[in-house]
Amino acid sequence: MFTTVVKSTLKEDISILVTKDNHPWNYLCECGDAKALTVKELQNTNAIFISHTHIDHFVNFDTVMRHQIGIERDVVICGPKGIAKQVQAKLNSYTWNLINKGAIRYEIREMLADDKIVVFELEPPTWELKELHTIEGNLLFKDKDFSVTGVLLDHKIPTLAYKFQEEELVKINMAECGFKGGKWVRILKEAFLKQEDNVSIDVEGKVYSSKELFHLLSIQKGDSLGIIMDHAANEENHSKIVEHFKNCNKVLIESFYRNEDKALAAINFHSYAALSGSILKQANVIEAVPVHFSRKYTPAQIATLEKEFFEAFTF
Image 1 (cartoon, rainbow, N blue to C red):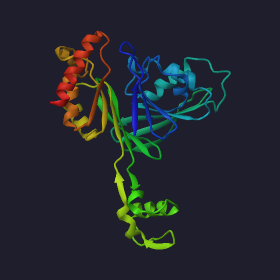
Image 2 (image 1 turned 30 degrees about the horizontal axis):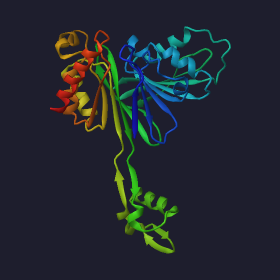
Image 3 (image 1 turned 90 degrees about the vertical axis):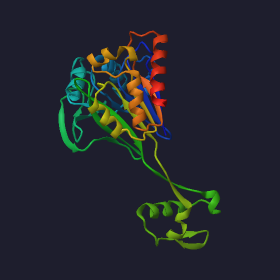
């Protein structure tokens, strides 16, 4: 299961920390100016997901990088076209004569199109940008039990939205089976996943075929999480959102403006509260969370914005 914490306050630039049950690493979505992010959280961050590099989404990368130098492992950075050179430019703005190779390695995955990703690497002290290979498809990141895919949206520039998807789990009902646990459970699950009906499984001295025990197993659908930042409220974006995030368990979506300011949303290629809520309703999202509001609003105005969002999502 994924847990999200918006680490930025209403007057700070957006930053969202994603964690997962029984998983050692953190995942950072957006590098806004969030003072609540701790040194430990940043050092334990395994991948950074940037929607685009407008200042309110990228300004805090320097602080993130400051606390990661010296962790001596790889950190993945994902973003749209141009992110690799922009990360390199940030790193090259400092002097690194006392930092050696191996202090950290950034692997940057740059999405050029919805079906094309180019992978680069950057290492101190020279931070030479090296292109490694190209990936076909939209799979930006994969761990042993979850993956992250991306879809490009229009914000007058390409902006990248992310979907975290947990793998399905094979569960066993130990109370129903009446047996004690043991290595037979692992063997049974492996046979089930491979659809091998005739694997011999010894359970407490009696041998069963795997097919005889399959009724003890069930598939638990994996959790899913969407992070959708700045995007124009247009038909093409909405079609992509509905398709990519359909039936998602939870989605955090930018809701920059109140309904009365939707003219500003159109001018600035942003979304507004009611439309963000409505689109997630169309996508059959279970839990919708409005985030990333214009800093021109007071807390009371943001409360109104959130009400407009949930009215559109609920009704």
